[in-house]
Image (cartoon, rainbow, N blue to C red; front, top):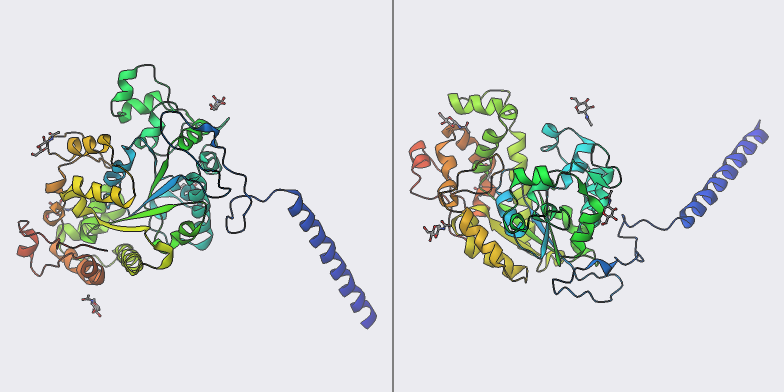
Amino acid sequence: MKCSWKLVLLLICLCLAVQYTAIRSIHDFFPRPCQDFRQCQKCPEIDKSWKSSDNNYTPTNHNTVSTRKHIHLFSQTRSGSSFAGQLFNQHPDIFYMYEPLYHAQQTFCNYSKCLWKPLDRAVQGVYRDLLFNLYTCDLNFLENYIQPEPRDHLTASFFRQTSSHALCSPPVCQVENKKIIEMQPNEDWCRKKCRLLNLTLASMACQSRSHVSIKTVRIPQVSDLRLLTEDPRLDLRIIHLVRDPRAILASRITAFPDQFIAWKIWNATDRQPHYVDLGQITKTCQDMEYSVDIGLKKPAWLHRRYLLVRYEDLALNPEAKAKEIYKFLDLDIDNKVLTWISQNTNATSSAKSKYSTSRDSKTTTESWRLHLGFDIVKTVQKLCNNTLDLLGYKTVQSEEELRNIRNSLVEPRTFS
Ligand SMILES: *[C@@H]1O[C@H](CO)[C@@H](O)[C@H](O)[C@H]1NC(C)=O
Ligand SMILES: *[C@@H]1O[C@H](CO)[C@@H](O)[C@H](O)[C@H]1NC(C)=O
Ligand SMILES: *[C@@H]1O[C@H](CO)[C@@H](O)[C@H](O)[C@H]1NC(C)=O
Ligand SMILES: *[C@@H]1O[C@H](CO)[C@@H](O)[C@H](O)[C@H]1NC(C)=O
Ligand SMILES: *[C@@H]1O[C@H](CO)[C@@H](O)[C@H](O)[C@H]1NC(C)=O
């Protein structure tokens, strides 16, 4: 009996040894992938031959450090990030992408639920790999996630392609009519003309610009970006866009009516239904609070990489705020950005969609105060008291105070 046990043990050891050797040799045979960039010291240098001649971007010959700069617009759903994203989308040196993480998220869960789902660590890793690859202009990396799967690197399903100027203009989208190129890419027009996106070509277009900017509302906390800020191959600057959580909630109720039926009932009756889910807005506030807390403490990994922007300040004073953001980025603000601001922050504009970015920003910032029941406001003030306090959003004690829009609830603050 004893003897046969030893034999079994010996066999197991032998088996493990064989497997180990096999895995080792497979591992050595294939070059290391670049996904896990902590381990990857010798990634092939990005091909710089794709530069276009019409900008003065001159790469140095460092092995690992790219001269490209990376901008992360870090925000939460319904915080005005589409609007803020335009400040980068309009700049001719910036390659801007609108929520590319959407595709990865869709792979792991269905739309309506996943936006509010806590992120598990595996998905965090996927997001980080994807962001890294997009920041280094490898848009083909998205092919793993786009549904239906792209063929020959072509896809008609790139999420909100029309929100990215670079993906709606030459060389990515070929247009004969030069006049159209000069205009803003009208979303309908882009949808028709540029539908089939060549991801290889898009990657090349990205390479030709000095800055890559990505907007996300799918990363919960700024600490989730830490490894990217520490990566020597990236030069990441984070613009943290926050907004009054009461306004965020009002906007979500309006934008996603089927998911907020309980809230609509609450709003209409001023009585809280027992089945209403308070978890989501609580989490939104906690994520905001933790991130702002970390950002303002200025840990070494965020040194000169973090800027806190309140949406309300941006909306009230878009030009001054935009200039401040560009100063932080060490980038000259382009006239195209300023033109976009002056054309899109005045009342006259008519087009309005769920993600509309043009508005009379001065009168809309606090209009939530007319559209949210006082009982809901009181509850959110209780759930989010620390966040409101931290960001300088005043609480109200009566319905009268809430509706009196002449007295702003946004305290003047500078964060630095
Ligand atoms: C998403 O929802 C559809 C239909 O509701 C279902 O068939 C599919 O399996 C879901 N996918 C995931 C990843 O949960
Ligand atoms: C996509 O663009 C690349 C780069 O210009 C080109 O070589 C390739 O042929 C294009 N693919 C298709 C299917 O047109
Ligand atoms: C926007 O409004 C300001 C102030 O009222 C005005 O000076 C500016 O010309 C307007 N811009 C446009 C594009 O209408
Ligand atoms: C809340 O109810 C009021 C009427 O009491 C309505 O005007 C407003 O639009 C509602 N707000 C939302 C977000 O549905
Ligand atoms: C927020 O509420 C909690 C619990 O009621 C309390 O302990 C905390 O001091 C409040 N914070 C602020 C800033 O008022």
